[in-house]
Length: 143
Image (cartoon, rainbow, N blue to C red; front, side, top):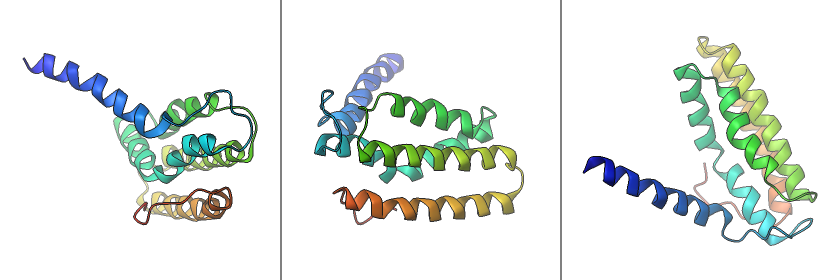
């Protein structure tokens, strides 16, 4: 019974994730469109989720960098070509990858982790105006 319940939750979770992030995506869209913004910027808005998941991966031994490359790297490959929104996402991916390398290198050193997190926050703060210039409205409680 427990297995059946668990197996029924997985498709619902996948559908919910798809509905939240990709429902307005138009694969044929080129450049800056509202659909590409709707596809890309929720990832940036949810950076704390990816940060927490990468830290869990580092604690489990699989590595924060591997997690970021696997999840966000795959998302970057699935994006439409060109456009300013894609450039912003690629900057986001570089920021998260640099942070994850520092996490993997200094996982046992709390002071270094705090410094890496502060730098990540500052880098994300520099991305926010770029996202807003492209028309994205961040939620009030996105942090």
